[in-house]
Image (cartoon, rainbow, N blue to C red; front, side, top):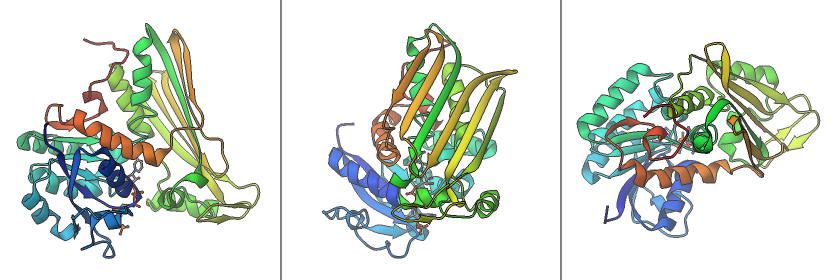
Length: 337
Ligand SMILES: NC(=O)c1ccc[n+]([C@@H]2O[C@H](COP(=O)([O-])OP(=O)(O)OC[C@H]3O[C@@H](n4cnc5c(N)ncnc54)[C@H](OP(=O)(O)O)[C@@H]3O)[C@@H](O)[C@H]2O)c1
């Protein structure tokens, strides 16, 4: 594409705002406007809402006016960063696609939507193909650390027997919405109850990463398990946003396991709690076996914004439809032609 990529930012929370900031720095994007439901953001300049020093001469419109606005400005890409669950964000994606726009989203469930939402996935795939556009979910995790990155690392393998991964994060270094969804400062029973009701999600995407990675390698994962439990504070702790008494929630340990028959093939463990060491580690048991470790770990917010921005040019080269990171050009270990 010789001209700038014309975008609308749908959801100007911390992540949508960071994406806006880095897009302006890149120089090859033209931001046409934003969409949000927060009344304090509607009608203001996107640059101002995103906390930039410069105005972008692009307004934030209400979600209620999104359909009309998108059809009027016809962006090449709608960057969607409003929520996790595909059933909730589905109407927003439909508005973008029917305006003829490609959609790239930070929704964790959209990274491998066939797992939780098989029917919606078929509808979206058909819709995207009808309008000749792509829909892609990505981010740091799911989207990179537990799926695309290990897939890339397997490129040097003659054989892969098992992949084990750990992402360990100091939750106190993350944004307010992250700390809130990990239940910081709550009583453990309140957090567990809130998780059941969907009020607190902690990490979503263990299964999505496992299934995506399996598909990237051409290996059929026949069973997936996932779970999460609170990490309890053993002393008083404090973050920029929360004061945590001993016995209250200081973070979460979550896990996912992917099996081929009875054999464990992929295991992921995520630890996000206050004061925890920051690192990412991937162990591939195979021929050869390798251990990849990055310390401190990849900063999630910067990485998510960067994944969105860096994947846009590649996404535009993919075939229309509901796509995954597997459809972007990437070398990996492969089991199929
Ligand atoms: N894949 C990954 O690796 C990854 C990484 C980071 C984040 N994420 C996900 O990305 C999403 C965005 O993160 P965030 O921290 O920026 O979330 P956030 O703080 O909830 O911000 C979302 C923004 O979208 C707005 N919004 C909500 N519903 C809307 C609608 N129907 N129409 C228009 N705007 C709407 C919100 O307004 P209100 O504040 O008024 O609700 C808010 O301004 C989250 O779901 C998060 O879990 C994924």
